[in-house]
Image (cartoon, rainbow, N blue to C red; front, side, top):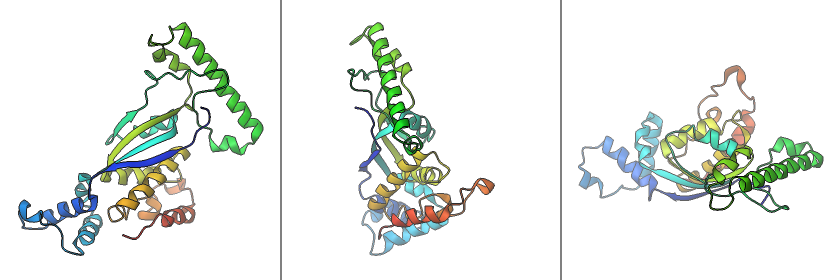
Length: 248
């Protein structure tokens, strides 16, 4: 227990996601009946249909496929942000039912912001000492409120900080992922959810490169919407984006 770091895994997704999307697109532009469509796609159709619907902005067809991620090593501060994306399903480790008690030499898992690390070891030590203090407060309230099997977790958790780690299972369809990446891969997004978004984007590009060929932050897929608030770092963002490109 103690400091932890981001870990993202794509654990499940719609079987043959690009074929599903291409068949849905084909239906929209074809006189064929459903049973005729089940015959599949001829060579080249998959890429052509997906490219066509993306260029037209016909994104309802990519809603038919979804992607499920296992995420750990993120803070409760990130949880407050990511649940604003309401076209998604979340299952989150509960502080109400899972105890965060620890012995004198340990603490709950927590996240250390990079800017604190950049200040040097002395400041990091102060931060860790504060986590240990909060752990002692949590342990104390846990016992005062009844301890094990009493439901003490429900109220003892109020003393825990935003830095406390959480774990979640997250599912989004491809269209919502496009929206998520557009906002959260942006340099102006908070650092933790930005790194999560980039790792999620990398994962889905590997399994559905055609579907996500145009997914990413606005500044590299269309145009920066921030105006005078732009970060001015498009070249740096573009470099990272290009490093994710995989052959479809």
